[in-house]
Length: 117
Image (tube, rainbow, N blue to C red; front, side, top):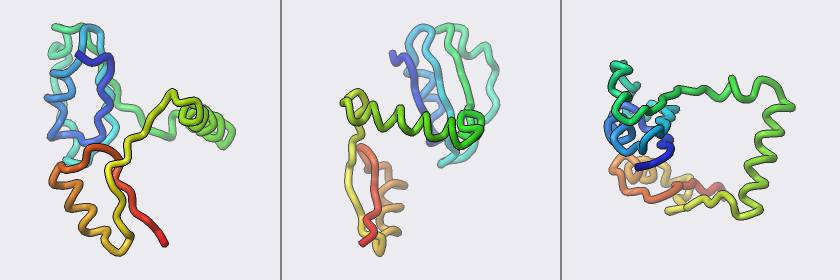
């Protein structure tokens, strides 16, 4: 299982997310793309002694200094090769509707970008 599952989709993937966790894994729910994650009994996590959290960005970037510090850390990871970002495809901004359909169909295997020329 996974040590952590970071889920930006929400309602339609919560069961997969929790089911994929390793012993003492953490489910991080931060998005509602398919709807809000419904309330569930905390005893659901007992089999794996799992954790769950629902963070929001503003609690981790309370002021400009913290925002810059966190951004610098992430860009440092990218520069040092400690964090890899997989780009699936890029759509011209004029084709944004097609890009959304691509995402909604579940075709993406990484980040989907929009190009601004």
